[in-house]
Length: 270
Ligand code: NAD
Image (tube, rainbow, N blue to C red):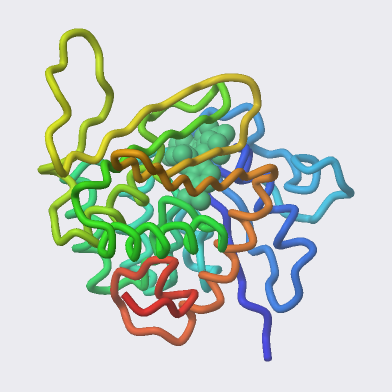
C-alpha cells in the first residue's frame, strides 16, 4: 500500500519539529511538506535542518494550498486563527485534518464543526494514549463516585505555553462533567483568587502552573471527606503526542467526513 502523505503546518514549532522527526522514522507514512507563518525565519530552510538531520529535499514554505493539495493528511499544532483557516482548506481538499491546537473558543469550535461536513477532522486536547486512558478513567470515576467527591484538576507546563488551563486539563474536565451528565461550562471554576466563597457542590476546579521545560503534567483529584483519589499523567517527551497524531492521520484515511477525537481513534466506546 502507498504511504500516507502527511504535511505539517507550523513545522518549525516545538510540536512541528517533533512531528517531522516522527514521520521520518515511522513506516507507512511519508512527509509531503511543511509550512510556517508568513515572515517566519525558517521559510526556505530544508525540513531536515529543523531536526538537525540531513536535507530531506523539502523546503519550509508559507503557501498552504500546494501542501493541502499534495497531502492525504495535515497535522496542525499551531494557533487558533491559523487552525480555522486550515480547517477550511482541509474541507476544500477533502483530506484528513488532525488538530492539536488548544485555546480554541466556542465560536472557533463551531467553525471547525462546519468544516467537518466535508473534511475528516480529528481533534484532541491531547494525542497521547496515556492521557486518553486517564480521561476514560476520569469519566468512569466521576460517574461512579457522585458529587460528594469534589473534582479538581491540576496541570503544569513549560514557561512558553500561552493558554491556560491546558487543552488536556479541559479535556479531563469534559470527561468528569460527562461522567456526571453535566455541561462543563456550568460547573467549571477556572482559577480562584481572593474571597471566593465556599466551593459549590458539583464544581470542577482547575489550577495551572507554569515553569521550566515541563512537557505536560496533569492530575485529576477526587476529594471526599476522609479519602482522596488522584490520577496523574506526566509527559516527558512530545514524541508521545506526535505518535498519536500520526496514528490519527492513518486511521482517518478511510473514514467519512466528520469530527472525531482520539477516543474514536483508540476505539474507546463512550
Ligand atoms: P509553538 O509556538 O512552538 O509552535 C506553533 C507554530 O505554529 C509556530 O512555529 C508558529 O510560527 C506556527 N504558526 C503560527 N501561525 C501559523 C500559520 N498561519 N501557518 C503555519 N504555521 C503557523 O507551539 P507548540 O508548543 O508546538 O504548540 C502548538 C499548539 O499545540 C499549542 O496550542 C499547544 O497547546 C498544542 N499542543 C497540543 C498537544 C496535543 O496533544 N493536542 C500537544 C502539545 C501541544
